[in-house]
Image (tube, rainbow, N blue to C red):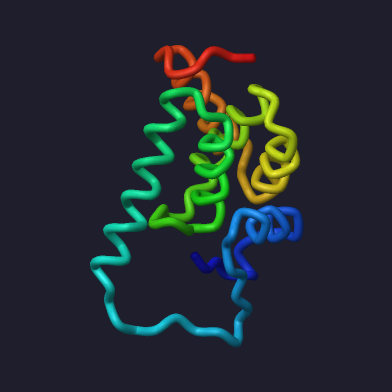
Length: 132
């Protein structure tokens, strides 16, 4: 997977490369051709992460946060969802999640952060995963 350098902060760049994401700078451009098979595979990656998160996999929480914060693995850039997943990972004890959550929060309004927190509470209340 490839993520744009200007869309993520330095901490997320390091974590994204650790997770196997390629970082691209402004001089690199994506091919124009449409690849439905690749999009389907990317959608399956997000779906498998969601299934793993529902089963309580902490690394899936973090991976979803990275995917939504960078727009990778077929996920759109959605800072509210990214904050939600980093928050859930941080609460459960995932080491790097709190810093990533803080990085994402710097780019959000107070209302967006409140919405992300509401979604995280909703996820926990639905019984998908108990808080650590």
